[in-house]
Length: 267
Image 1: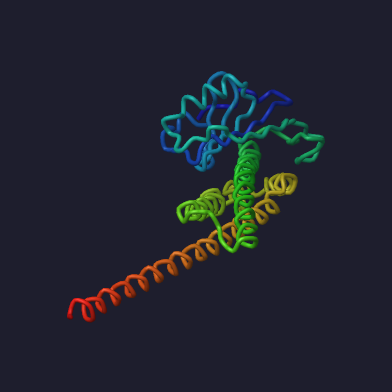
Image 2: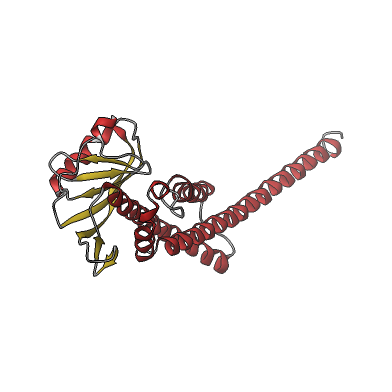
């Protein structure tokens, strides 16, 4: 396996990018990797990258040009790229005299190792994923609120069934990505092999408020889904009533025509 190119540096940058909704990680051969689960690879031009199948890439000691070239090179393995990727950057410092964790806007490590970088990458990747969906769910909440206010004021809503179904579908998809594919609420699998790093993970998880943000996002997703379904039921009920009136009108017309045939044409 390859080796870290920045092993002797006391400080470097870690940058997370949510590039797409998914990444195909099967293209890398073991000889090209620094570690697996999560996949960690060297970056041409300097540094290393940790890749996650839910579309996040975390760079360590990689310049902007090298990172852009790396992202361009993995485009064949990217599914549904984001036009404006969510990003987050922190400083990483190696100091054996400082307790591992977050301090003064920097992540401190007692020693540099691929496993520690993978723990940092796991937290940063989940943070950018949450940030992305926090932003998108805010827009959905605003739309649901405006429709609810309209329903309260006028007794009807101008939304179409298709747009509400799209909101329900987007909410379910977001929930699947956050809870299922990314497993934001779960600890990374690397802690099973390196339990001594659990303290570092828990401190970073607490600093980035992953559990709190995850719980808040789940509540918001549930609220959007319930509101959209309620409004959809309201629309369907209105459509059903309209169809029933059409049927009644047709029956009345048919009765009138029948009476006309009996009483007027029969003379």
